[in-house]
Structures are given as C-alpha cells and as structure tokens.
Image (cartoon, rainbow, N blue to C red; front, side, top):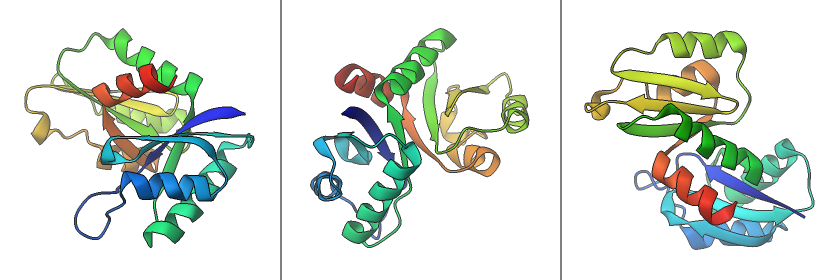
Length: 174
C-alpha cells in the first residue's frame, strides 16, 4: 500500500462549492481508499491505496467527489516523497515574504516554465520545480500579478496552498 496526498481544487469558495472535510473523507473511503485523514477545510486528504497510477487515482477520486458533492472537483495527487520534495524546495529559496505553492496536475513543458519564470519581477517571483510552482511574493501580495490563475493559464490545472500548509502536511503525513 502506498500513501498519497490529494489536494482538491476550488472547494469551500462561495455558497455553491461547499464540500466539508467529513464528506471528503466519506467520498475517499467510498471509492475504496483506506487510512483516510483530512487536514483543515481547504481540501487536503491523505489516503492509502494499492493503485499505482496517479492518473487513475485522481480519476477515481474526481468521480467520487462529483457523486458526493454534486460538482466537479479537480484533484491533484502527490506521493509522500513528492510532497517532501516540494517542502524541501521551498526551504532552498530563503524567501522571507509571502510564499504560496501552486500544485500542478500535469508536469509543465520547459517552454511554459521558462515563460512563467520570465514573468517574475523584483517584487514577485515564480520558481518551478516539477509539478510545484513556488510563488514568492512581497509585501503587496494581495496585488500580485503572479497568482494561481496565471499559473493555470500558462501551465494547466493547479491548486494553491500557502507554504505553512505545505510544511505542516509534509511533517504530519510524510
């Protein structure tokens, strides 16, 4: 059995996309996964499975979530080793400002990575490592040009977490 961490995109935003932790856990268990645990109500779930294909795991979860929640829930899964690597990458930047991580569903092309990273400025930077985009933002982070929406436009489906959540999940679940 392998342990995976799933990150659900765009839930608990507004009145129509509510998906509580308990419902998430029930959907994951109902899809046949075991050792299920959620962390805060932003769509983070750990589970175990004998399945090996990330794409098949994501598809099974997305179907279970659609059936339980009544709407599409894009899901992005990482192995424990991959999540540890994302957290370790973050430490290598030595950034003291706001740090968000956009987790990508698919690996980006080299050209797309280059284009995104070239959009960086002195106030905000994007650093891509595998399926993680580290958004290093300054004091005016609420006015940032580099956002998860920009990441998705250039690199595909992504969900965003702040670095504290990534660190906590890596420590707690890896």
